[in-house]
Image 1 (tube, rainbow, N blue to C red):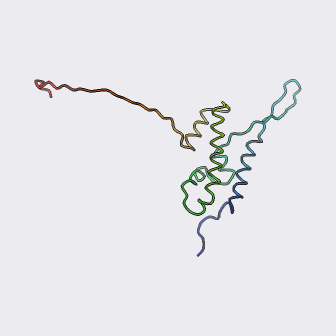
Image 2: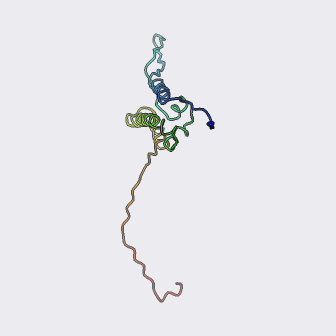
Image 3: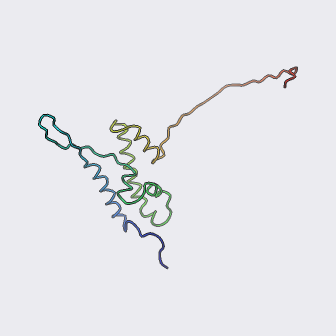
Length: 143
């Protein structure tokens, strides 16, 4: 029986893990130019890029939605690759959370990423207690 569907992007878990690690290294190595106004010389300083699910997905050749859906896969492909993708997702989540608490980058953007990719939620608990009594006047003709 022949297999149906698109061929696998990665032949092994190790191949996928290598691609994922390359994404994290690329983010960590990013630098930005800084010009010395007196001398006019440009130097490069470390400016790590935030890890994102979209960036990770693009690097490994799939959509963000498909990457997020790996937790739902029950076939052999999903079972084989899910732990690797789960570890990568947790790495991105931790990076976003650390940047949020360190104040690095745009805080609302980090919150947006955490809510939309990791099911983080704002919760509000409301406890209301009290008694209600209702009195009807039997002589009121409008009732």
